[in-house]
Length: 185
Length: 185
Image (cartoon, each protein chain N blue to C red):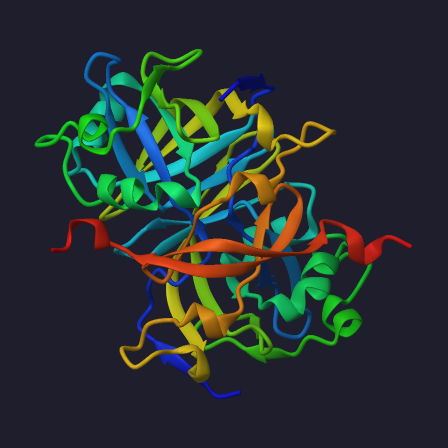
């Protein structure tokens, strides 16, 4: 296979595309982010990167709290919209029809339509360049009952996850294998 | 929909599952990681989280360089194996048959069979708990010619990406939409 050198850039795929809620419950905002990942198992932590120019950057920085709301494929239009307009100009809950409900632990809202809601408290901010990396400790998680299997694990075939890669949104395909299968006898 | 509170944990999905290469070219190692993400666009940067007990933790820390090798679905067994055994005991290139080739810029190898190879230089290490977060600047990227489209973008339908979520490996499904489509007239 011929390999070609391309300009160093953000080629990693697949990545999550999530709707992050932040801001006070009476004036919440939604920002769609893809530079998002798990960074620690215990304590459970995530990292999310936001450009300093974004409205949500100030909301998260000032309040120190945010929630990740994981979309289904049915929410692709709402998710794309929340990544394309600014909360300075638009009430995104009103514009999309998404339903804000109070979070369990933090002082903002989560999105009712998303089957997984992950509440976080900010631990630190690292300025990196175009983006600041916010590291947050996961303090509460809510999951729609109908996407849990018998063991209490997520059943992704029911969760209909949205996948982001190469500037496009995709659905999940087929189950290939379970973690650790290659070394089980 | 009934939402249930679950123990705060690492529920974020989908995430990448990548084979990270590190160590000297004459004795390289592979570690499979899923706590991996893009953290900045310019400079392009990634974050990867590794437990301090892992063999690769010392290799990356000492050398300050590593590469992300993105798998195809055909490599699921090799990828799972490289996440299940230790490089202290096993030469994973020999065990899997994967082919090490010299990286372009950094002093380690990349995996020939992976269609995207992202070379990184470590910028900082953040101890978080079970995992240390390594932030790395992307200094070189190589892509298999046959997964690039006319514009030089990645064509994920040809890249056959591997997706990780809820302890399982999955293939990519259908194209849903392109970033920004919701606000185009």
